[in-house]
Image (cartoon, rainbow, N blue to C red; front, side, top):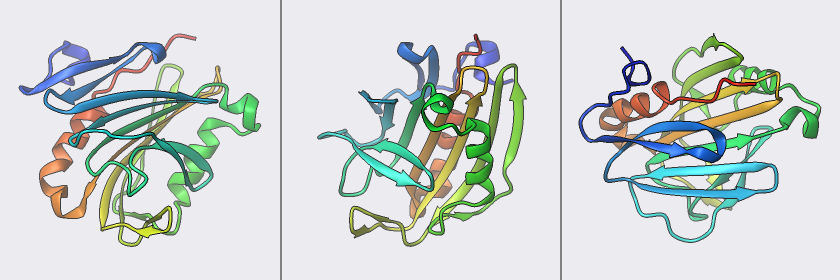
Length: 192
């Protein structure tokens, strides 16, 4: 049974509350946390490495996301971007944008799995694993990286959640379990 159903987490994890979005995420207890707000986006970062400096905006496909470390994001961790009123601001359905990303990812992102889709009350969630060999961020080529990406749409409010776990590919074998715990057991607000 998932931790959100039992309220329990695996040893070494704590619940990290993100009260401004009425959500909580499992986080390894020795990791670092940072919350940021920008016009139209609330960003939360849970990282293995300390988070220094300011975040910046990164374009990933047709979605702009807040990230950390201009020299190449965080190395290992979870980035959560919440875009309230996404539909009102863009005239694009959050679920349609999610489907488009999963079906037509940016050319630098190679899918390594089929995507999964499920509905939980008003939430429509799509998840998929990716690998990138040649991602370029702010003009710098990044090392090979693995990702576990979730898009969740709350169509009735026009809100889009993007949850992205990333780690260097050489660490994926050990970090895949962390990615699954953090993403698959997250708790998002289902109220309208």
